Image 1 (tube, one colour):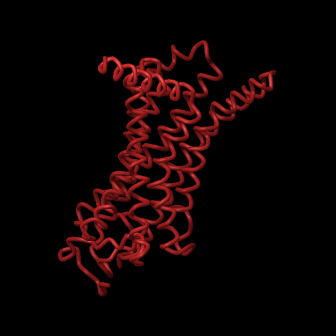
Image 2 (cartoon, one colour):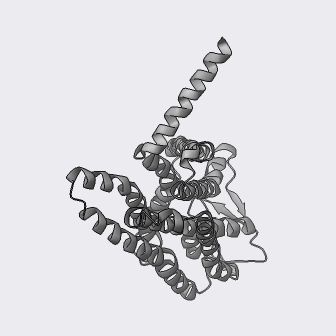
Image 3 (spheres, helix red, strand yellow):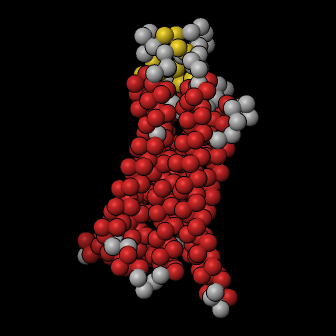
Length: 320
């Protein structure tokens, strides 16, 4: 354990503590994280491949879903790769600049995911409430602009807090009680005044990351639910709720995790507890997204069956 303040001129790296100090649990966590990471990579790559190869999935909804898979791949890789490497090569050091870059990219991907989910809810609203004008409104240009706007908002909204943190020059220790470079544990080890940064994160988190996407999603679903309730057939209502419930599940799960992790008071909950929330957010949510969308989506499951049937027929043809 390092103690005593360090100037930025001498602080060239941090020591990432990891998930736990208990040797017996480190092996368990390694294989658990490795399994989740492989499922995340495999599931999202399958979604991306299906959307690219199957022309039936060349629609606005699956265009947004493909970008959501890209974001999930990015967010899980930028955080979990270092955790896995720590256990493999037993190297807990991360360069100061690499730490800042990791923090920026991870925070950006959170914004990307929330805004893409909001765009998906708008797409669902148009498909449910304005079906006759849907293909006119959600054309290729509009979809591209929406996704570009989601990426731009994600990259821009995290610049002020990251640039503010990069000006900090004093740290009480080099050891970071986390498994990647995140802003909350980094603020714990700096001896600079973090009150302005905390206020910035609160405002940015409430309005630009959580509140705006949530309001956009909430408004869309008010209209969607209102339209569903007007369906006279109970079977039709159940089918409609079943269709849109997967997206609502993902949005709710992600919002709960982000509020618990970043927008709770500084004194509420230990850093170890927030580290567990962060592990669930960075590892499980990107893994659950393809599972939720594929298991509850007939188009995706149908595309998977067609691809499997095509592969089997190709193998039989080669044998003959």
